[in-house]
Amino acid sequence: MKVFSGVNNAAIGEAKALNAVGDLVASGTVKALGSKPAIIMRKKPGQPLYETQAYKAAREIVREKMRNQTYGLMCNEISTVATKKYVLHDDNNPANILVTMDGNAVKSVALVDYGPPQTYFVSKSVTKADVSKYCGCEYPSSKRYVWEHEFPYVTPPPRT
Image (cartoon, rainbow, N blue to C red; front, side):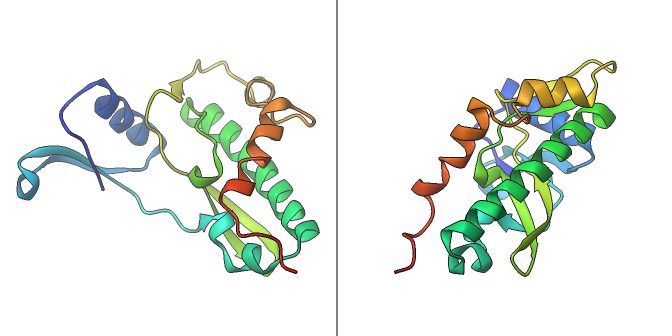
């Protein structure tokens, strides 16, 4: 559940985006919180990569492999959602990408946080190639560099 301070364009936009991708469970007001507007979204499996036990326990070379797997799966999921639901998820920091693991391999990803300003409705003519190019999913790219380098700020120091 996400509670907003008031009804505003951000709250309405997030509810619309969640509805479009099939993740909106309900929206309305929460009387127990002073009748504040809120949205309830579908719970997604997984957790951010940097919070997984496998990532925390891995050596840097394995962590890099996990980040690359996550990035590739994330790009595919972003382009799939954009071309099937016509919503572009562009708030792709590591905290908004939930992973499920199979040992040291990233098995799947789920996108969370469809709030503005980094969520867009896109044309029904958009292609996966369009989205991949926009998102910087082609390697190498500056967006990928920035995404990968957010990890040092949230991961524990390397094992000695």
